[in-house]
Amino acid sequence: MNLFTKFIIVVQIMLFSSLTLQLWVGEGSVPHIWQLEGSIDAQRQNNRVLEDRNELLMAEVSALQNSVDALEERARLDLGMIKPDETFFQIID
Image 1: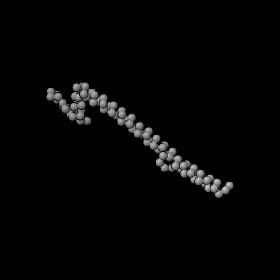
Image 2: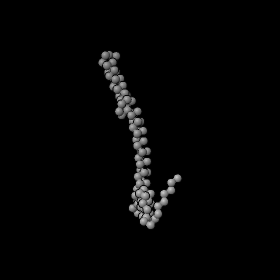
Image 3: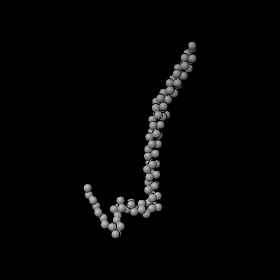
Image 4: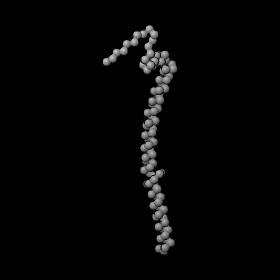
């Protein structure tokens, strides 16, 4: 082998090494992609929890808009309101 052939082989080895290094280290590497996939899964799970919460809130809003009983229950429990002809008794344990 002459000097030029040896030089080409060394350059090819260096290029291959740098490309392989980029595959395993740094941004866009395989471990980085695995970490991003884990973050995506965690965010999807968090989104599911928030979607369930939003559905409950939308159901409550709908009940408050459409039902006088739900509105009265909310006023009694959250605001402590009573009707004019009622007597309020508070029982302390």
